[in-house]
Image 1 (cartoon, rainbow, N blue to C red):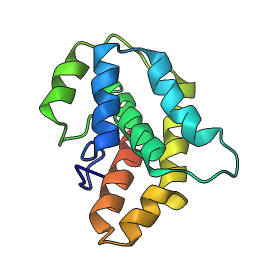
Image 2: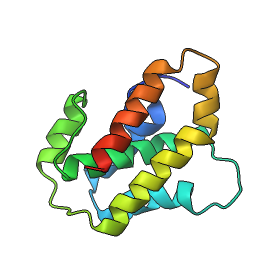
Image 3: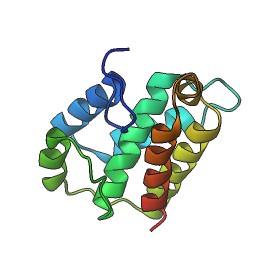
Image 4: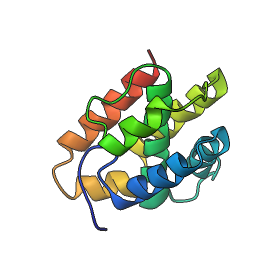
Length: 132
């Protein structure tokens, strides 16, 4: 993995997802990121899908008026232009994805091998903002 940091946009998968989303912002891209986490049953949650779902959840939080205070400039510029309005199903999917990633995923395991405190704070902050 290239870029690696505890913020939900500080990894290559999330940054790549954000770039593609900002090139063609649409609800389907957000929903697909959550489907990859929420609808795979008992299959193992791979880190790339988790990173993309966390990025999508950050988009939902921003659209709901509670953006991450540490958004990259690219995200700020993109989010200002968005006309998407998340519905209750999208918000619920975001909350579920974040919860699942936090408790049982490759991304969680990778962070457990390091100092996970900052990652947990970032994920918990996102979950709290989504519940506002």
